[in-house]
Length: 119
Image (cartoon, rainbow, N blue to C red; front, side, top):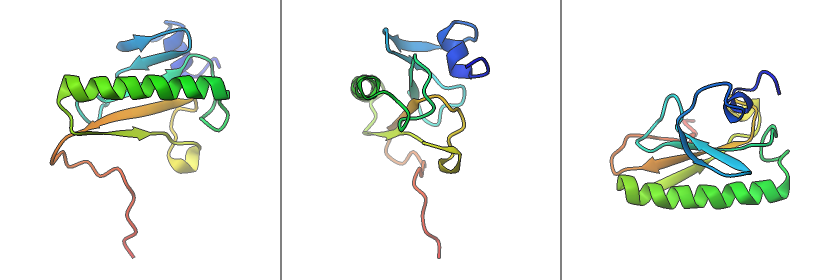
């Protein structure tokens, strides 16, 4: 995909702070992290979202995300982790390339990542 920012990062055509890389995945720091250690795990092959992603690639991304999450707990002293994925525009997906947000959580961090019914 010529206009995909993640494809450009993978091809080294756009800058990124790389945390981890292997043949299938790339983990980078987002431009606007929501917490200390926030990391994006992306597939090197272009897929739109997890619903479109090859099962073997998706399984690999899950394993990499799990390991990075464990490392973030140790490295940053976080108490918990959110693993987040948006599949589609209406789910607030903004980059249409399969990726997962790994968001370390800290006591009283003030983040509320869940929608609440305010009726």
